[in-house]
Image (cartoon, rainbow over all chains, first blue to last red; front, side, top):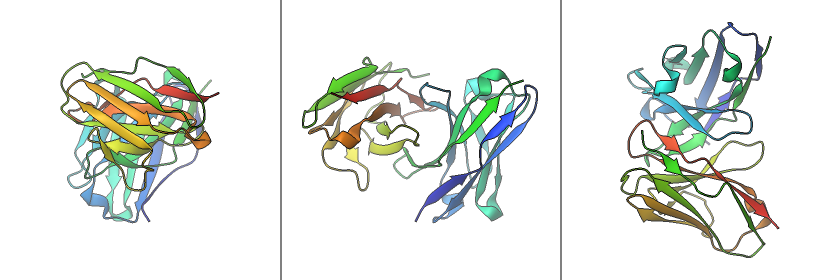
Length: 118
Length: 107
């Protein structure tokens, strides 16, 4: 069965870096794009961008250009989200989600909670 | 960017009732709209894609309709397990954008 399994919760200080993983199984990793979605506490969903898992090319939404980086380890069917120079407003749950053939996001990871606090 | 507006942040309904949630796009997105259900403490789940197509395994009490800028998601007979927040999302052009969500409360 198709699964996206994300890494565990993170507690970081402002200015630090965090790298979240999303391991895919049950399908051919390079056949489907991978999205990243942010959900701040008590708030809605915000699309951060996606990475083409075949070419490795990332696309970032405007609010996520600069400190954010998507990457892949294709041999391990794993996508990564790295956030540099963490700020308090980065406190959120981050989801990875596959783009299906429908162009909607059909499978989601369980979410990774990132807390930024001094 | 395309703005997706769900005008009701909260909707209250009873078990067995029919409830409809609306979503308006700031520009024509054809039928490229998906609906997701997010239960408390869980990841979102895809229910509807391309405005009206039910995703695999989704109960037929969930339906979607609309095209252009106006979309509707309907639960024909609400069940207790439908307590959740429902989001619309356009998959017409990047950046993909979500509506603000509608929290369905069971009376």
